[in-house]
Image (cartoon, rainbow, N blue to C red; front, top):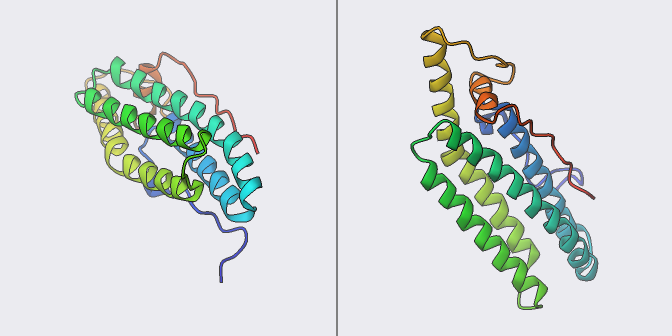
Length: 179
């Protein structure tokens, strides 16, 4: 028996990439995925579609902001896998926009299928691609520290100082999902 308040996606410590800003943005993406899922699961088709239309636009805007944050960090630190990582982001955006277009055109589109795609992509991207970025930032931070370089602001994990320096202090004020 499923509890009503059980979430489709639950943030777990194992998803952390060790960079507070990125982790906070990932948590917001998980929250948005849960909202989309709840819209699909709780309501009739008409309400689910209307709610989905509003929520997906906010999610696309947030994903765009999140990807820009990661890409800015990678550019500033000359991340060796930057091109591959960015290509994954571009492919994801391309797929999402194609699915939204299908939805808006009234073509066969199942929001619940889209939500599962989003769930799987977020978790696999975090587990593989973003974790690799996090490990690189941690290693970079440790190398700077051992070389006597001062990197401030490490309160959110070993790599947070390197990441905050990489984004030039451009915070990541989370914009909560509207619902």
